[in-house]
Length: 262
Ligand SMILES: [Fe+2]
Image (cartoon, rainbow, N blue to C red; front, side):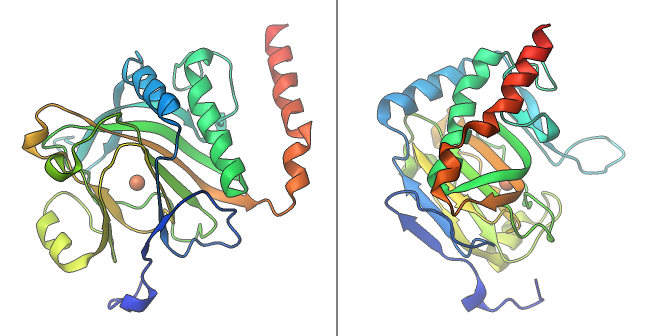
C-alpha cells in the first residue's frame, strides 16, 4: 500500500443476505453475513467449543522483546493448522484434539467452501480466539502481501452478546502497525472501517488488510468474545458445480484412515 491510500480504493463493508459464489480474487470488499448458522447449530457449536478441553494460549503475537513478553496473548483452541489440513479426522496431531472434537469445525470448514464456491489450495489455520476485557488484539494481517488469492473468515460464535454495551469491534486499517503501543493514534489516523461484534455473524475478507479486534468493554464483565478464525493463503475457485459431486477428493482421506489403522 502506498503512503496515502486513495479512499475510493479501500474495501467497503458490504452486508449480504446469503453466501455467494466468489467469482474473482482478491476479494474487493469486506462481507458481513448475519445469522449464518441455524440457531440450533449455532448454540450447539458455541456450547461444544466453550467446554472443549483444548483451550490454551494459542494466539500469541511475539514482541521480540528481551523480556519475552508477547504483544498479545489470547486463550483459544487450535482446530487445524497448516499441512495437517482441515480434513484429517484421526486423533492427535499437532493440535492434540480428538477426532470427535474436530467434527463440527470440519463441518463448518466444508460448508464455507461449498457456499462460497472454493477449495483450499494452501490451507493455513482454523481455531478459536477468546478475548476478555483488557485483551485488545494487536493490528496484524493474516497472510503475506503476495498471497492475493487468500480468503479469511471470522465467525462470532457467542450465543448471546450485548453489542451496544459490550463492544468488541473488529477494526480495519489502511496500513500495518507493529506492537500494542500507539494503538489509539493508529485508530484515529488509519482506521477506515469497523464491524461490530454480534452473535452468529460471519465475516469474509482479504486477509492482507491490516485488522485487529477490540477487547470487550468493562461492562461485559468476564464475558469472552469468541471468534472462530478460518483462513487459507491460497484458494481455488470452483466454477464447475459438478466438481462438488465428484467423490474423488474423499479417496485419499479414506485411504489414509485405512493405512493408519493397519
Ligand atoms: Fe486476523
